[in-house]
Image (cartoon, rainbow, N blue to C red; front, side, top):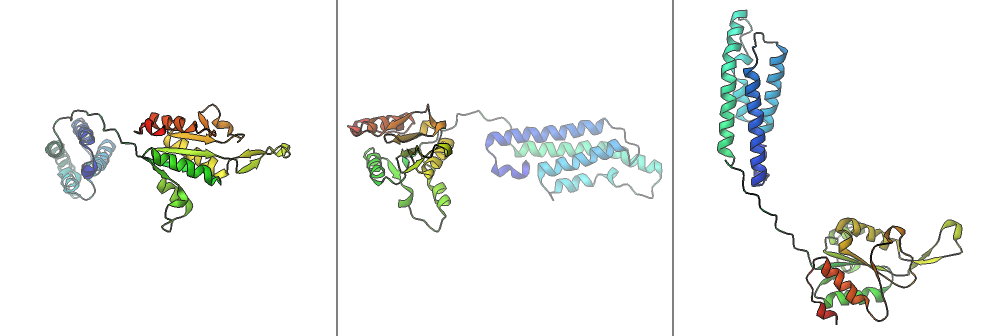
Amino acid sequence: MLADIKDLTEFEEYMEKQKAIKILQDKIHAINGLRILYRKDPNFRKWKRDTEVAIEHIFGKGTRHGTDFFRIQFFYPNMRATKGDHQQAYLKGLTEAPSILQSFIDEINEYWPDEMPQATAPTPTAIGTDIFIVHGHDGSAKQTVARFIEKLKLRPIILHEQPNKGRTIIEKFEDHADVGFAVVLMTPDDVGALAEEQDKLNPRARQNVILELGFFLGKLGRKHVCALYKENVEMPSDYKGVLFIPMDKNNGWQLSLAKEIKAAGISIDLNKVI
């Protein structure tokens, strides 16, 4: 809490202040309710242990606050003293403990803001202009989409065109996946079928394309992902019902894709599509 103050926002500081003060006030209230006559009183020992932990949590390990607290006389009375002397020491501590804990509260009040700051709406995070293009082996489709993205004044991200910098494929992918939108090209690069229907092979997208489609749906949300597919490509069953756009020969897909990008909050000029 107090030990971590530099890493907190103003609002978090205020809330931590209230939490710390409440803890110490509870400890003062608890000790005032005890009538400790013996050093091994279980209620006192529990209070002492809990208070030590609270002070360490609030102010951090090895601070003077712990030392000040431990020096209170009734924690370490003279073991050779009479029973009456022990009682005197404990009773003296009943006065000292609340006083020193209150001094800690006063210090917190000086350190932290006195009033809760006014809540302000968070500043919206700007959506970047990088568009990740997930593709298979259809180089023509990849280049066509990339050039269209550039026409919209956005930056297409094609993974194999980025420098490796000694990274593994997955590391490279993750480093470039922080984008505002992803376009997934479902082109007929593979074929597949159910095990019991191996004579009925259907055109499918590459497995890496399906994997990355799922990745971006989870990372960006459906609103920021658009699948473009070529005729007869088998779509993933879990993706049915979600909007996907056919790559028609008349390029009608371009306006549809541009509208999806704009709807995702990325500023583009739809006049550039024409």
